[in-house]
Length: 332
Length: 256
Image (cartoon, rainbow over all chains, first blue to last red; front, side, top):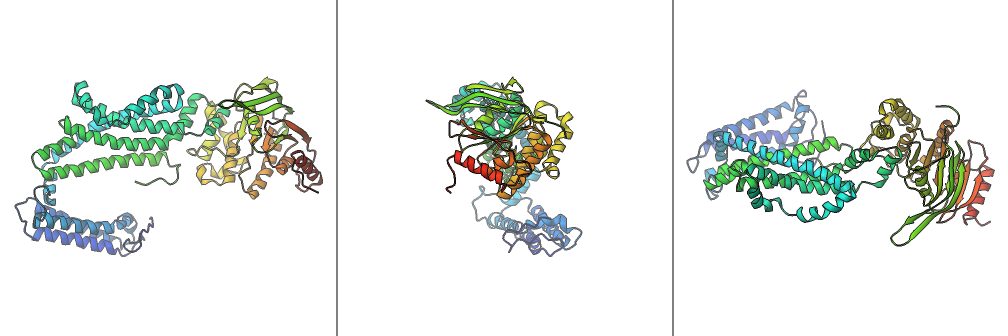
């Protein structure tokens, strides 16, 4: 039961068992949008119009049920978080309706570049196997590559921050090579590695390696000397100082590096899949564009957004767990 | 732990120390020579930046002296040892560890965590933080943080406890309370205490002996014994007289 009130006007305060005005409006808006989708004639021959209308109506019905549920004290606490989403649900219904009218119903936007919502739905219902496989193949490429780059970058960053000798030799190299976008290695990588999979893994690892290295390094270097003094007076070994002082103190900075590395990895993943790898979401988009199947492209884009956002969410969850001692963390 | 004297004898023999700056060396300590008896409470009093804290770093073994010798119970100090711990002006708690996690730092570093478990709880209880064992440092007030830092030192059963202006940043009420607690703790544990301070009253309230240091490079200007029995009152006539004497030594005598 969190009582968050941002802009008290639209957002219903999350009190248990209360009238949820935006919920009722949202439910009716979705059902209204469904009626428009179903009843207005399509300007062109499109599939899945009625299915889209059914989905929208079903969703609207669920929202209305939830609005009804929040007047019951038994269900209300569970619906508290949903209640905050009320204004969003209204806007989304309006946006769906506007999109539908501008594309399927009146063709105000040039086709085929602007796909109708039911066309996207059609991609999901008809081509889900290929989309699913593309997600799987993308993950198979990006997860090992990212993990490899992150682990090596972390170890390398700690070594650079801790040891003067490693820092001396590694610093100029990292400075020269690091800022180079990993994609610049693309021609060399596809030439040097026997398989496009090996080349892509290498590139993705490289993309996450650099930010993780630099931010781990700076995190370790910035650890207050006083922490080391305290630990040393109590009999800590150098290994203890690294593991239990330098590394935990550097973790906030390490997570910034992991976050930046994740973004860089995704960017390299898509480029690699568009250039050389014959699978994955990047390839799917390229392939769809080649066939002028724009709906497929948008669908893939949506899936990719979900995948990237999901990965970042996972990373932030992990950070919130490990760095719960910090105050004022940004919630993702 | 209620027993006789647990402290060690500290001998500082002809110690001089200089910092190597880029082109020259900056002398901070000059011919420091004194002996602290086991269980004695010695205050090092001097102007800010005179090198008092450096002397503590030498005793802790964090740095070797440029010249001279430091001996603990007759053995030369060559490095750090858990029996000589410092409580710094900043609590320097590890923010990623709870109060208990901080207190157990020493045993954990030495791999004696299992055996020292009860002592950690005891130390937290002694400083009045038993109820805050699982709090993180950012949730503590200044005084509580300093108590946690004290507990972290006590867990190591120090024979020499160095206090580097540990109360310097506390508000005056907390400061008064903690001065009393420090004395009570010392009377109970009888470690040898070295207190660095620039507060004349604090030195007189707490210590058996006050070593008055000069400006940098620090030399010992006077070695003053404080015989007033404890608990001491700050308006005690003897202490007031000593205070005048020390202020005069520091060139700060209040004009009559």
